[in-house]
Length: 438
Ligand SMILES: Nc1ncnc2c1ncn2[C@@H]1O[C@H](COP(=O)(O)OP(=O)(O)OP(=O)(O)O)[C@@H](O)[C@H]1O
Image 1 (spheres, helix red, strand yellow):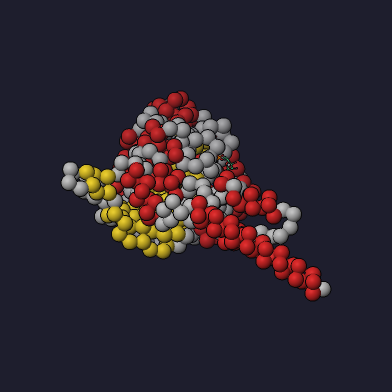
Image 2 (cartoon, protein in one colour):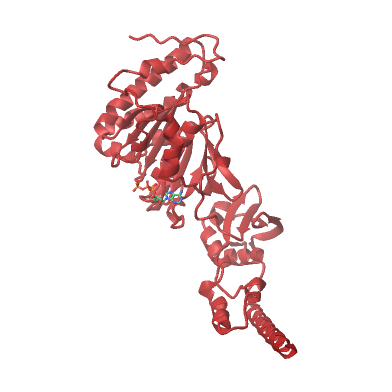
């Protein structure tokens, strides 16, 4: 027994000595590398031309301070005169790659997992193999007079599910996704319209469906929808019997007429507000919000360009009248996203796009073409762009959530609901808005 114990102890000591030897070897191998990420960033940028030589002295970015943040470190640099932040931002990928160069950066935990058994040599080889080593660091850059580089030890999660924390009852805020600093929301009362772009298969339709479901759940009595499903006509089909859905349009030709009807309703709503000395529906105390959601707005540019004129009008006048535009497209170009639409849409969410040109057409700058090949990974941009992992809501969850709102009833074409729904008296309104049919 004693002998057995002594044997086991000596094997353990032996393996620890080997493990320590491996650690020592690893550290020895990496001694010619700068250890600190701040120094690495400085070196990467210096080697890539971020330096100014005025003939007397060469200057480059200078590390000012470093601080711990959740999930990593923030390095604050001073930029020398003559080097702009944009210039450095364009090298973000270089910085990230440089920080993630695969080398024997194995943690003590990995070594302690080694067991003195027949797999010992195989396990050492595995943890020493650069392709199994961590390449997880992610970087984000900011500028507020000083350049801040945040280096996160872990990447954003590759999948995120909708949960109750993302539910904001009675508000018009819809979760956009998880970013580094937390979860962010798009508030349709703050920014009325949203463009949702992305190459095929990265999460555009899933997000539009989740957004519709969330809005129904949060404001069942005040939200209404006109859904334009111009791809295959199947993405929004599950909402067809929801009482909040006024119309589902699948044909671009029909879209023109429906959009014209929406614009008429919207203009009447505006006229009534004005006639009653209200600036907008909010001041008038009207709670109803009408969402015009298009999945593949690009179809309109091709098949019914005149319908795009109505989209421009909704983007321009919708906010005050309580109309919200959510314009989805997988082909963002100057034709499918005319400048009049872009100028009036204050927020964009884009998944990965095929080219920099498509990214510029969507968020006015490149970046979406460089997003990793991860479904649901996107950029949300209002004034600044934020990389997010958009939450995923399965069709089963959508069905469950909308089930209480399904109501078989006559739809557009059977009776004209439009004019009835425009005038909704509320507690806050001093004077009811009267709509006169002409
Ligand atoms: N947020 C997400 N997180 C994880 N996986 C997702 C997410 N969104 C979508 N997916 C996955 O990607 C698939 C394709 O998504 P979706 O149908 O939304 O693509 P799309 O961009 O609308 O493509 P298309 O325009 O061709 O219809 C989904 O079936 C789902 O498996």
